[in-house]
Amino acid sequence: MTKNLFIFSGLVLAIAIAAPVFAQTVTSTAITPSVAAKITCVGAAVNAREQSIDVAMNALTTATNAAYTARATALQQAYSQTTHSAVTTAVKTAWENFNKAAKLAHKTWQAARNAAWSTYRTAAVACKAPAGVGDGANSISEMSGN
Image (cartoon, rainbow, N blue to C red; front, side, top):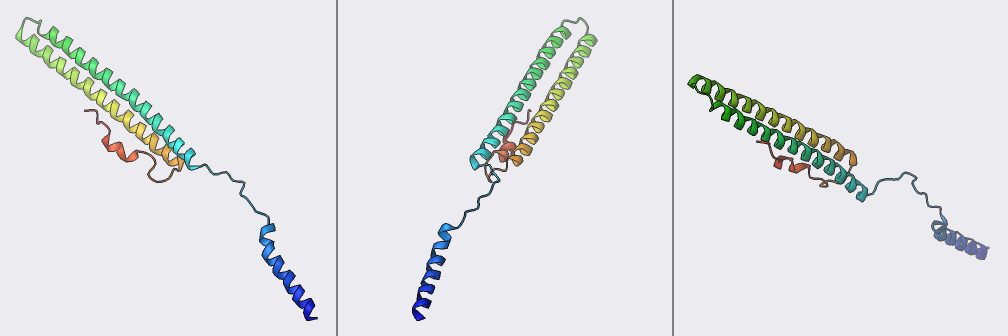
């Protein structure tokens, strides 16, 4: 009887040791994006932001150049006048129109720049990348358009 108990105990011990080896491994069917995919996602968001800012900067530059060109033409015409009052009125109008155009160009730039950064922030958060991936903290370095 002792011999049977000893053999039985030995079998139980062997099964207890071997059981984890034969256990079925359960894997999750949910696929989580890798860190590389999340970084790629942030990269795409940065690229979209930079393209938007590039378009906005080109628009600012074009509008500012147009304002300077219009001012130069208006001032040239103003100084071709023959009376003091006509020159004064034309110069004042030239500068007023220039200031309006420059302010509009600046406001348009600011709105486009802010929209690009806002869209980027929303997209970057949706990427769920690890902390520190992205360059949102550098938005303070962005040109103000002055």
